[in-house]
Image (cartoon, rainbow, N blue to C red; front, side):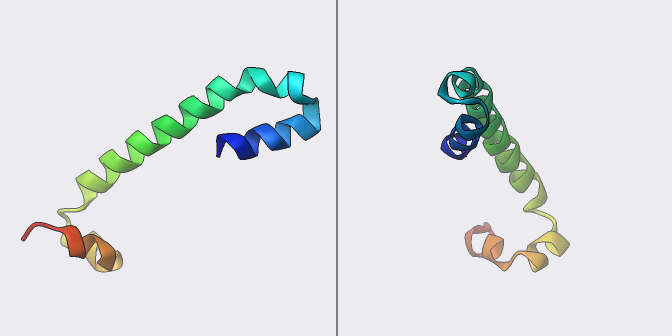
Length: 62
């Protein structure tokens, strides 16, 4: 994700203009990963949610 943003911003602003955004883009990726993990953990026990995502059922503790 960060590499894709960097490549696109390099085209728009040049490499020098894209470098300052690397830290912010990396932080965004880490925050999204943490929030997605917390959200999946919170929603996993709900049976209706598990029925929409059968792969969650494979690792669920019964």
